[in-house]
Image (tube, rainbow, N blue to C red; front, side):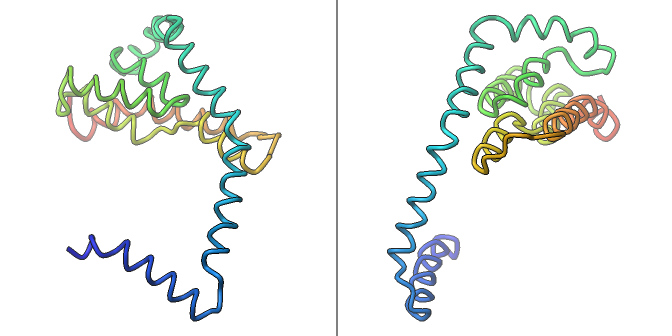
Length: 172
């Protein structure tokens, strides 16, 4: 019941605060909306390019080719081969990785070793390319320096250690 009132109370609180402070709330809202629309227009080309690249990666069969290349390394690390498509897609596309994650949970169950490892992997990795495109595109930063290699290294650590963590803490 209290949660249902939270948003209307917040809205009324902002209006009351604006009235007390003498701020034209509607004008401030319009200004913020215009800035947000401008920012969205600036990052839209990067997002369109990213979505197109993900669609091409999946449709061309390149994702399956990459999975076959990385399968021996995944086996050495104890990462189930069934998780490779999700692990490779996760830094590029959150929605694509989420669709694969849902499929993994449907096929193997959430309490299986593969399901638990997929859950840890999703929680310990990031949509790196999307995040970098979004934030650096919005701030107009062109030289990302060490950001991309560091972020991809963190993703790799999350991918490699997900199976080990599940095996250590939850058993196989």
